[in-house]
Amino acid sequence: MMQAMFITNLRTKINRHRAAVVHNVLSSWYGMGTLYLLLKRFTMQIKRIQIWWRKTCMPRLAQARLRLLNRWLKLERADIVRDIKLRDAKEQEELKKSPPEQHPEILKRQESFGLSGVRETIDIGKLDLKEETRKSRTSVRIEKKNTISLKRFTNTSQHINLLSSSP
Image 1 (cartoon, rainbow, N blue to C red):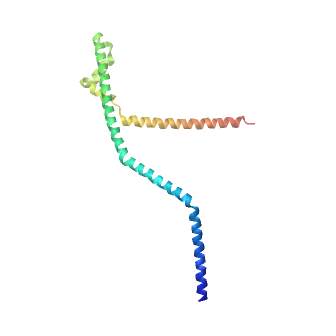
Image 2: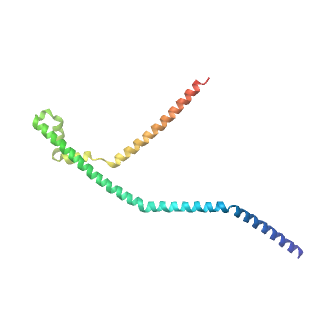
Image 3: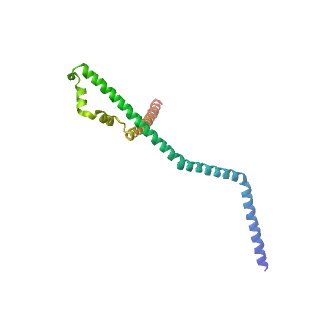
């Protein structure tokens, strides 16, 4: 019986000591805990805004971008047609002023296009947007790579100059 009381008292003291340690740790974390919870709430708000942006705004922007692209293509096509008609009118005036033998390139172009010259020229002159985008991205990538390699080369050559100039 005495032994059971002693063990019970010892367990009570150990549990009280453990509870005091937990209380001390939690008390010291009180200020940092509120900061942690504020940061956690802030990140959750950021994630909510990002999800809203992806679900609502990005599709709207894609639709607006597509409408703008279609409008731009119509304007570009009209501009190309106007340029081609002006060029054809100038060529016709040149052909009326002088004999056709003096302008073989004009005759050759008219023979190759036939009656649908404007339509075929538009198809030839029309910009391929995907190809242009790919070319611009590739050129930016190449330019960036050349700039980085040029920086490395200048740093290396400066390092070599420093090594060769040292006594």
